[in-house]
Image (cartoon, rainbow, N blue to C red; front, side, top):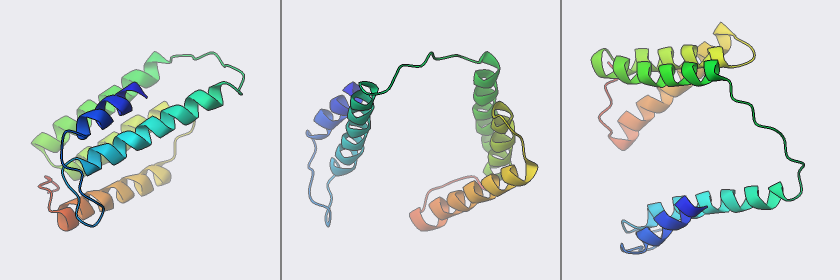
Length: 128
């Protein structure tokens, strides 16, 4: 909630505009408001739900971090499509079940999203 509030207040220094003609401060304001709202819902919900102990699994943390680092290195030196595939397959080892078919579907969906970012938004992504 504090991060959402901090960035929301910071975005007020920029011109907000309106939804049909947005200014540079509108997007950070909307995202920070959603983040603050999610935090507020979590705080209210925590008052009604019995607390549960939080357990850390270092193997899962290491798998997720290695997947992210591998994605970055592969995307930078080879291409992003292979980085996405590596990320999905590496991170899925941290789950409770492993399915190659499910991983291929997730990787295909993320690759489609990457192509949409490149072709529709004009982002310079190293897909090939």
